[in-house]
Picture 1 (cartoon, rainbow, N blue to C red):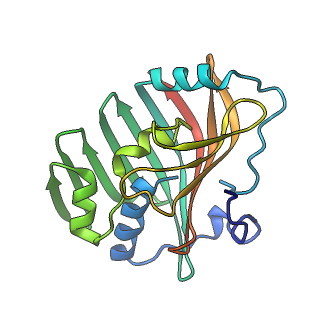
Picture 2: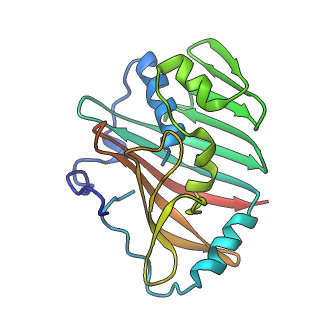
Length: 223
């Protein structure tokens, strides 16, 4: 399967051109991103100096259980554009995510683990035992939040179909899990961190929804 290319060009999709939308829309945008999500859907070539064994590289990714990510996240649909600063910390099964405006105003904070999740946004506090169910309660969307910590590293799940570049890293993932229908994840700009290569551009596309989510990582930190 090839990534749809009607959104492949960055010419009309720059972070600095994003215009914040209303707060309720921000919340829906953020919740959509959490799973679904995650960079250039068509430009998935990796630098020529990368050469890894695909299986060994996937094992290394699975061994990264504690990490931090800082970057930018952008959302584009047929109706709106939006971007925010992204901070994500993962410690094994526990995570903390925050999204902030360019002025440092917090849009959303979310933390949880396999047993519970709490979310603060729009001066409201939400709780649930499952992140996907929490998002379904708020938005009606069914999205696999639990997959995001794997997808963002370029780590394929046991049921995902992985498409590898000649260099050995994943260039695209076609998920096959609950609530994954229609999503295609594309990767580019792999950079080395210690003994592992991590993507710095990640795209999540869902043509059926007309949505594209772009994550541009500024900094990966392994703990």
